[in-house]
Image 1 (cartoon, rainbow, N blue to C red):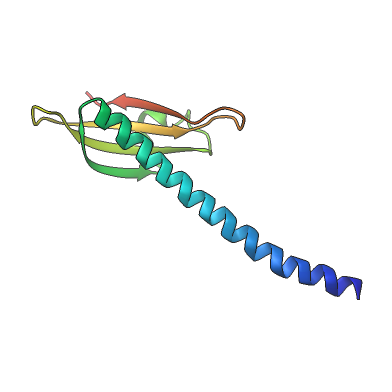
Image 2: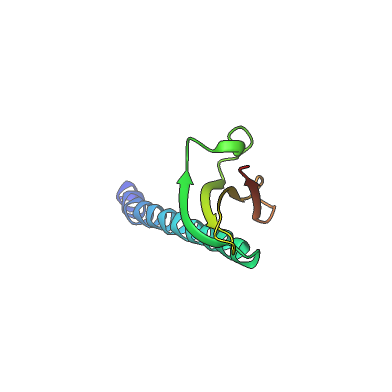
Length: 106
C-alpha cells in the first residue's frame, strides 16, 4: 500500500518537474534574446539576425559556463555598414546576476 502511494506521487511529480524545467529554459532564452536586442538597440544598432551558438562559440569558447547562452549577432549601423558581434548572457555562478558580454568582430 505504501509503495503504491510513492509511485502515485512520482507519477504526478516527475512530469510536473520536466514541464517546469522546459518552461524555465524557454523563459531564459527569451530573456537572453531580449537583453541582447535591447542593449544593441540602445547603442544605436539595428539587429538583423541572431544565431544561437552551442558548439561554435567564437571568442567565448573556453570561458563559457553551462548557465550562459552565446549568440552570434549581425547588426547594421546607422551608416548602413553591417557588423558582427558575439554576445554571451547569463551567470557563471548561481548567486550572481545575469550579465551581458559583447565582443565585436573586426
